[in-house]
Length: 207
Image (cartoon, rainbow, N blue to C red; front, side):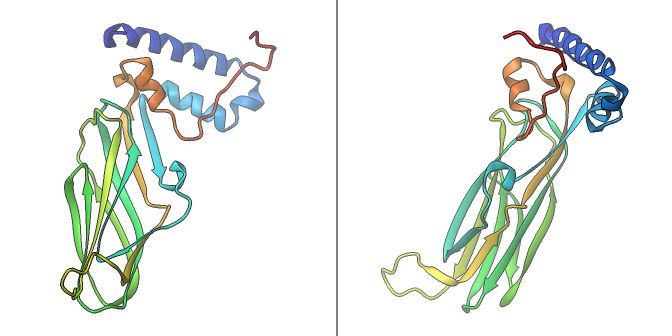
């Protein structure tokens, strides 16, 4: 369906949902659901906050090889610019083996931040702003490089070390997007949160 023809349909559907919400009993209107309906009336901008735990990564991810890399794919609206986007990277490091150790964070192949890791243990907490642009894949690719320059014997392969980075499932991406920029039903479906809420009438619904 063409973008220009979808907008009147989406607008009409939203108005219908709002009207249905306002017809609910007062007890329902004075609730989180009622508050959400009132926000729909006043603002087309939607806020999302997605953590690794929301994506099913419930255990910490550990990088311990001398040269380790991990990619995470965080969902964003496909083909719609995201605004006020921030990556909140939450991790801890352990560095008990000598040598230079570095952490590099990437977003869609572009370096965001680099950090030299000191000896010992400590947190790695970074709040990184992201470029406001659309992503046609529907994902932001977060890359994590963990590099420990340790002495290797000739022909020795990359190995696990006493230096490790533990990435918390609470690492998250926060952003806003303009709902009026959604152009088709497939893209609208991709913008649903991980645990959406569906409001239905309290009367019997046909199949």
